[in-house]
Image (cartoon, rainbow, N blue to C red; front, top):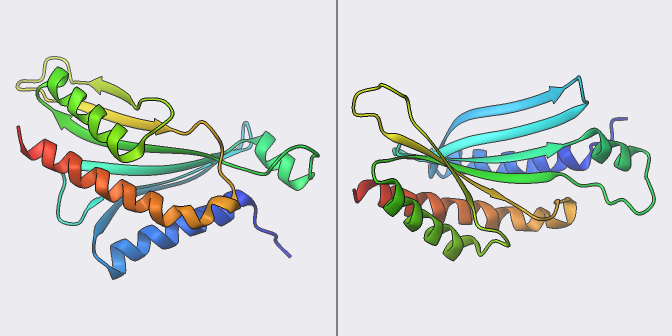
Amino acid sequence: MFDPTVFDNLKVAFENQLYDLDTLDRKIDIINRIDRMEMAVMSREFALQFRLAGRSAVSAEVQLSSSLKDLAAEILEWKGETPSCSLRLRFVMKLHQIDEQCEQIEQIMMRIWEPDAPPTQTISYVYGAPNSMYTNVIELAFSRKINEEQMDDIEGLVNHMLQTLTKLEELSKSE
């Protein structure tokens, strides 16, 4: 009988939360899904991208990843190792005024998430495109890995993501 890994259980928990918000509550629209196994290094990645229902200025992504070491520690029950996964959150939006808006975004993220480290904002644009807007990828990485002990925290984490999307949408509309 197949015994699901920590990665599988957390993936299903995130799917349940987010798909319910999409199909039952109609608070979000899921716009992309990634479920990948990288055979070269035996790693796994799962991501769901979504945005607030009926809105398109800002998207969010929850990403889980598990390395070969993570999987081996779980299956082989290595002493001193706790089975776990890495969690990363991303938000993507367009900008016109980089300096001003990036500062506001950092304040929003720090206020909502109170992270150990400030969020990373990566700005890009299409060279030569007329009236090119800047794309900002805002990323929150967590200093520790997660496991099934944090399963009850997923609803709160998703609620924080919805709050962040709302604030970033407001910022996007205010320019």
